[in-house]
Length: 265
Image (cartoon, rainbow, N blue to C red; front, side, top):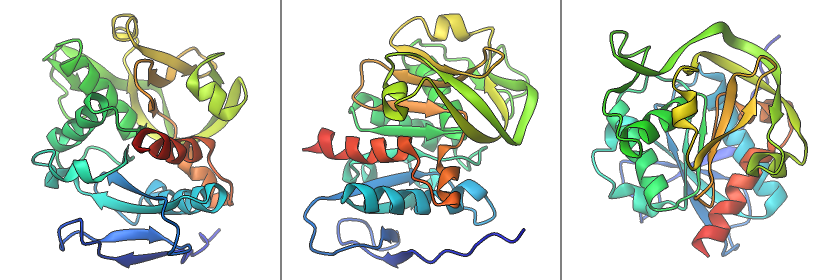
């Protein structure tokens, strides 16, 4: 069935960002003082379903919360330092990896973690959250992604036992976790497009500190993590933004947007 065409975004350039970078501004009143700037860390590709869904999810979040959102796609190979990242209230590391620059993506995730900026990582963003934490918190300098470094001693991200490309599944949410509070449920039904996830061999060591597993599939494999010492630092292997393609507000996206207000207030 043909995908519905949406036209609920517009482009404009903000003075606070270099002129070669364009903003995607969710439509809404221009006189709302509560405007939040969100970086979409990733390499935009119109053919990627999640990339088409993300602006719709942010628009739905704006419509529901009343918070005016300006989102900017930030290519990973443009993140050569953290100077640009200081302009944003929150960072979302989006699907579709391998990224053009793994180093750039990891730099953005580290910035969000260390500066307590709201962070959401979905699919590839989840995978790189795990790598960043392993390298920079646990000091596993040899932590790698099996897709980009097939010959390595420590694949913290490894091939899934079963492909999750264009698959929907139920995930069980940890009671009293941030994600369960957001969904107001102990389970969710979400869509995937991935072949790689957290390597179970390293999960006990990775998740024994402040980074905790908070969602699992029906086989017990980790599908979401969150950093307990951070105001909002959540990664999901699934792609919650896909709900926006059905006209539904993804709870995680709404919570992420609200976190951008509470943290920067």
